[in-house]
Amino acid sequence: MTGFFGEDAAGTAGTWVAAIATLVVLGSLLGERRLFGWSQHLLAGLATGFLALLAIREVIAPRLVDPIIAEGAARPELWAGAILVAAAATVPWLPRRLAAVPISVVVGTLAAFALGGAVIGTIVPQLDATIARPGATVAGTAAGALAATATGLVLLGFVHGVPRGRILTAAASAGRWLLIVGIGAWLGYLVLSRLVLLVDRLGFLLGDWLGLVR
Image (cartoon, rainbow, N blue to C red; front, side, top):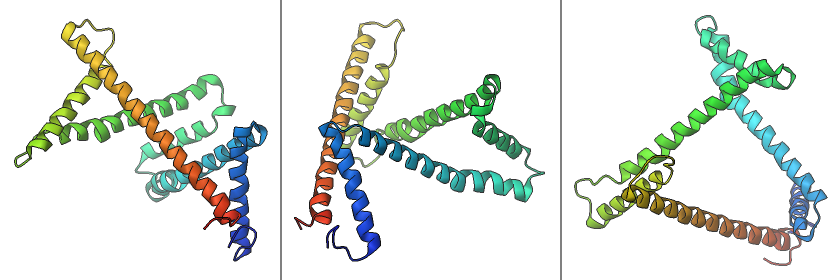
């Protein structure tokens, strides 16, 4: 089956839409920017709509609206949350001084949540994994010590404007080099993953759409 001769109308239409979207994105490599810009707007709109629906169904409705309906009189903090949500939703139409309040609360909350997630979800488990435990092998202990050293050096690399001696300066410099190496490896992984996606899209065009390869 190909995009020209599908099993049903829905499958054929879906294949054609996917093929056209793929060609529009690949067309940017040949200098066609208008259609590519349209595809970017389409992607941003779909992602925004999906995130809004996800926020309403998974957060606002079950954790705010339903509790207010069930026990609104006993939960005054929920009314404060409802007022904050309503104010954040009407920010474009509010005066700047009033709009600054919900925006500041939202930005501060997200920043605190991200910082807490980074500490609890990344740094603490990483340090916990470096602790030598009874029965651990020599290789495991050495790997944990190496990971702890690299983590400490990278954290020292973020210390700026503090008087330091030669040892701390050398440690901070080594941490920055480790950070650069990690970022380079991450970018290399991103490039490789994008190449895999490109090969997959080309295989889709030649196989599922045109039926030239199997």
